[in-house]
Amino acid sequence: MPTYRITILPGDGTGPEVMKEAEKLLDCIENNSNLQFDRTHIPCGGQYWLETGEEWPAGSFEHCRDNSDAILLGAIGWPGANLPNGDLAGGQVILGLRSGLNLYANVRPIKLYDGVKHKIHDEFTQVWDPKNVDLLVLRENTEGLYHSLLRRSALRAQGIEPKEAEDMVFDGIEGEVAWDNRPISKNGSEKLIRLGFEYAIRRNGSPIDGSSSVTCVDKSNVTRGCQLFRRVFHEIGEEFPDIGKEEAYIDAFTMWLVRNPEWFDVVVTSNMFGDIVTDLGSVLQGGMGMAASANIGDNHGLFEPVHGSSPKHAGKGKVNPIATLNSVQMMIEWLGIRNDDDEATQVSKLIEQAISEHLKEGSIMTYDLGGSASTSEVGTNVVKHLSALFE
Ligand code: IPM
Ligand code: MN
Image (tube, rainbow, N blue to C red; front, side, top):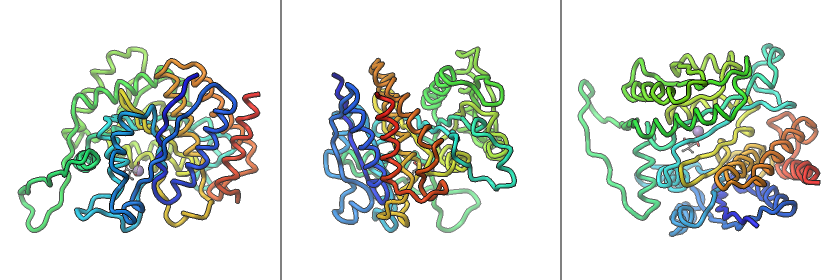
């Protein structure tokens, strides 16, 4: 019987609330299949730091690295929770793991389900069919504008005090300056982009005509890092003669994404662009409550909703848990592929179906989708659908 070691990091604000629903899904899978989960819960985040002076208990990074088959994260970040150097408190958890476990790809589906309305103004909504929104963004996850913060967080997670960068002189600028380096490497780009093409092989293509493509989104008319990224895109693209290669500058891409999401299949992009574009993309899928993600590397996987800790909604039991439930789906799917576990692959398809059925039914929706159901009522209803699919 496969037992997967799952490390659960509920984190801040609404993180623990949505994670409770994720665990209901895990319970349901355990009760209805051979998949079993050995769960470890680790308290963490900005609120934990305010209470204890630590971002998570000592040894947590090592536990995630050495004793976990997959990691589930709720949300990190809390108002006023910043380390003395200004870094995000809780950064060890989300950023330290991304960098320290080399989770080089942040995989973020943008998919509109039947029964869910996207959030573009009504006047335009009629022309949009859910089947027009089904793309996958791969955000580079260990380099780019985040690199310095990622490395500081990863070092702290391993008990090493990071050095601050040396001062620099910027020609033509006087007075105080703050800056962030933006390294983009050939190796990092190759890994991310190759994974993008591999996803394109498995997917159904772009909604507009079913053709498979990868779109390279960058700003290579301006930055050197993006020039390297785009060059690597074309080099790796040669390994995949059957997949279309498209390119777009990030500024124009944001416009096309909102106007014609049906053009896109897989998108590969750098770290900060991917961060921004997936929040924008969530609008096309019904909001942040619907946006799931997988942070994956060659040896580890961390799964989390894209939304943050939503301090203003915390403790009210009202946020949408679907992004988290979809992240669990991505986790089970990844475990299935990685471990050649057909049952896990099968179960991940059932989760997807249960979520689709729940949304299509449309009667138990949280406030963001126009309903008034609680977080827990949604979780329970998805589990009800999943249980029925197991029968
Ligand atoms: C995300 C979040 C994080 C990021 C924050 C919490 C550091 O916005 O996962 O998209 O910027 O990557
Ligand atoms: Mn973000």
